[in-house]
Length: 127
Image (tube, rainbow, N blue to C red; front, side, top):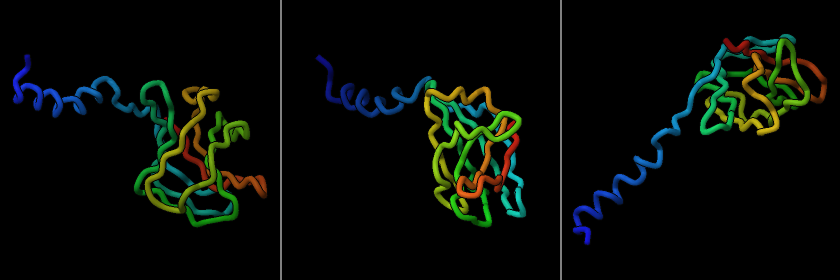
């Protein structure tokens, strides 16, 4: 039978053990530049964790605003099949899930795209 102290230590360590082996890994990252006379700046990263990918915009992210901005991926050009979601905010850290059906690791760009007018608003080339 376990002592009360051993049981409490095991319970306290459980959250630490749950995170072992599941660290997020930045696959590629880049810095935004504005497009179509818009201003965009800050970091963008493609991150993998436990086999799932996310697009992460850094705390330094800033965008001057536009109608209908969305986050998407590109491979040497915008790919409309990768529209992820509307841009949540014009500034600050944000995370967008990449659907499992998209081979995120094969893309080398993160776009801010205006779907309504079909124009680029910002681009981060991933290295």
